[in-house]
Image (cartoon, rainbow, N blue to C red; front, side, top):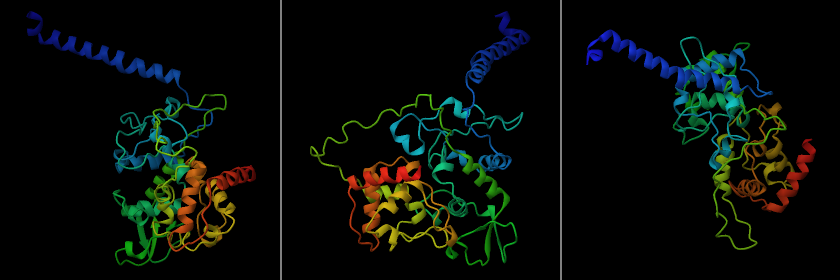
Length: 336
C-alpha cells in the first residue's frame, strides 16, 4: 500500500510503463515497417501544387467521406487495378513536426474511393464543375458544394481558368466562373492520385471473395444479359448525363450522335477502350479510356453500347458480345 500512497513512485512507474508500451507497440513496429517498405520504382512524388492541394483536401474534410485504399475484396475492383499494398504509402511523409496527416486512407466510403481518381477521371473540365456543385454532373450526389473556391468575374483575365457552369447553378449571377488557387491546388492533388504500376516481375495481388455461383441461374450455353442502363450509370453518366445530352460546352451528347449510332461500331469501341481527343478543337476535353481504366469486359461494353444505341431516341442495331470481342482485339492492336 505504501507504493500507492507515494505519488512520486506511482507517477514515475505509470510514465515508464506508458513510455515502454509506446516504444514496443508504436515506435519499434513503425521503424520496422519503414525499413521493410520502400516506394515503388515508378512512384511519382507529389508536386508542390499537389502538396498544397492535399492541405485543401484535409482542411475541407474530404477524408471523412472518401477513402484512399483499395481493399483486396472483389467489390473494390472498380476503384483500382489491384489491391493497395504498403509500398503505395511508403513515400508519404508527415505534414510537419506537429501534424501527422501523412496517409489519407480514410475509414468511411460515403463517396467513391479516390485511390486512382487521377486515372479514372483526370479531366479538369469534369473535376472543377463537380467541386463548384456536384449536382451539375450527378443529380443524386450528396457531396457538398464548394463555391467559395471560385469567383465570378465580368471578364476573364489572362491566366484565369474559366469553368463551364450552367446558368441555373449561378443563382442569377452573371459573368465568368473562375477557379481560385485553392480549387486548382485541390485539382492538382486529385489528378496526382494514381495507382503506381508494380514492377513486371512482381506478382499481382489478387482480389478475394468474388461472388460464387452468380451464373447458376443462366441456361447452359446462354450468355447472361447485363443491365446496360446500370453499367452506363456507373461508368458514363457522370459526364454524358442520364438523358444522354452531355453538358453543354463540356461533354458531348450521345443522343443523336453519329458515332454512337454508326453502322460500324468500331470507332465507338475504340473510344471506350482507348479514349478520344478528336473533339478538343470544339472545346471538349479528352475522354479517358474508360473501358481500359475500369477493366470492362466485352459483355459489359456491349451492354453499355446497346443502351446508348437504343436510348434517348437512338435506334441503331444492337451489337453482340462476339462482335465487341473481335473489335476490342482489333483496336488494342491499333493502340499499340
